[in-house]
Length: 78
Image (cartoon, rainbow, N blue to C red; front, side):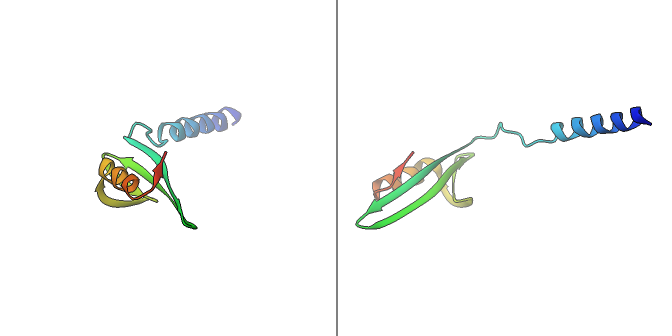
């Protein structure tokens, strides 16, 4: 009985580890901050397969275009 429980626990662990999220996607994020004249704003911009996701929402804009525009309008993205 102990071996059966141990085997079930091991199989559950193997299954759980095998089903973890794949980190191989093309996703990296930066934080863009704006601070001027008492106005502050901050947003997380992620590159997901070449598209800019802003605070988790697809902006339907290419990542590089979004970052360029943000920096042109006074945001600092790092």
